Image (cartoon, rainbow, N blue to C red; front, side, top):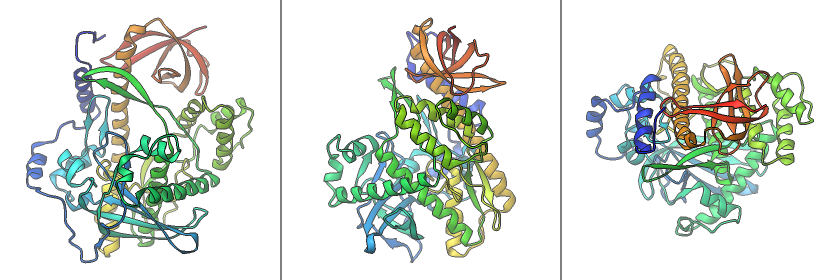
Amino acid sequence: MTNTGDRQHRAILQRIAHRAMRERGLVPDFPAAVLVELDAIHGPATPTDALTRDLRHLAWCSIDNDDSRDLDQLTVAETMTAGTVRIRVAVADVDALVRKESALDDHARQNTTSVYTAAEVFPMLPEKLSTDLTSLNFESDRVAVVTEMVFAADGSLQASDLYGAIVRNRAKLAYDSVAGWLDDTGPMPAAIGSADGLGENLRLQDRVAQSLKAARHASGALDLDTVQARPVFVGDELQDLKTDRQNRAKDLIAEFMIAANGVAARFLASRKSPSLRRVVRIPKRWDRIVELAAERGTSLPADPNAQALERFLVLARAADPLRFPDLSLSVIKLLGAGEYVVQFPGDTAIGHFGLAARDYAHSTAPNRRYPDVITQRLLKAARAGSPVPYGNGDLAALATHCTEQEDAAKKVERQVGKAAAAMLLESRVGQQFDAIVTGASDKGTWVRLLEPPVEGRLERGYEGADVGHRLRVQLISTDVERGYIDFARVR
């Protein structure tokens, strides 16, 4: 067990993070060839297509986490006739600077994702690109791939298009402050007031996003709300874990990204192009979800049914909003992980069970995710009528690789997060906590404390415990180096 009392927390966690990256087959540092190639890039990409539109005059804005610097997308709304609204989503044109099979592309292809740990971010692309030259930064002209969507008042998609454009971010905004303003619980962020017409535009975006959300949930999209713990440092000392929750601004961005990702998938299908889809299959542990519903007085059908599950979730949130995140976490665990698959022309779409979406590709975060870079290249080729830039076998191998590396990245993030939690809890060994079972299999039983929101292994008293069960547990040991937090059930 590591004694962290006289050592810098951040340095310890950084060392653990680097080790975890290597152990999981991820590369923590950029190879020399990448840095050489990076030195030859001296500015952002400029339009090379005569059909690229100039949309810099629009009231584009970004909404992301407070500390986000890799800005992948901008949004803007426009009122049209008969109650329809045009929504545009601009996505950073990463492919314009990161060429296929370059050293930069090879590294991105290896890791496939940025890894966000408690102590350090391991970006998929060097920060010179991801936070500058390919980031849609404030008051910076950038080339982008724009998805244009026209929605009716009920949230139904009336028309869509994809094209290249040059855009300019008029306001860099943060989720929490925008959500407070939209909910009338906080002031208007200064950046909104400084951009002409942006306040009204964001209210319009919010109205459309709420209609999209209502339409999706009516179709069976699941209303889930989990607790995410983010470490809080003062200097290099870990002080606390802050709980991040879903809010109205996050919903706004999520709805537009889901819609844009659906357009991307259908656009490729319409052009007879293969696509890299993000899917969540029909849950294998539906029987346990049925049991969770029955424990709360709701009967679900024997066969998986997203609409019935969504009705149950709505009732459960209303009945016990404070504990709803615990139920959400249980359902997410039981639904199973998402994965990437290739859909070739003529294939039947697997779909995304949790989103109630038949067609869904990842296309809106190319600075952070390699599948989005692949999709961007497929979209450009399909739009230009050019040959598909990947062979069928390569695409299939990439789908498997991206799934595996994403899983590895999540394990690194969880391991470092647990190491951080172990630091905070090492002085509380012997104390008791309320907990919920988050995982139960032959590999072990896992619980998450209700407060602080920390997950660990149930080493004793796990007999009969299953996902969703509430327990009283005692902290019996911590190990910062291995990220272990062990509990015993209190009888």
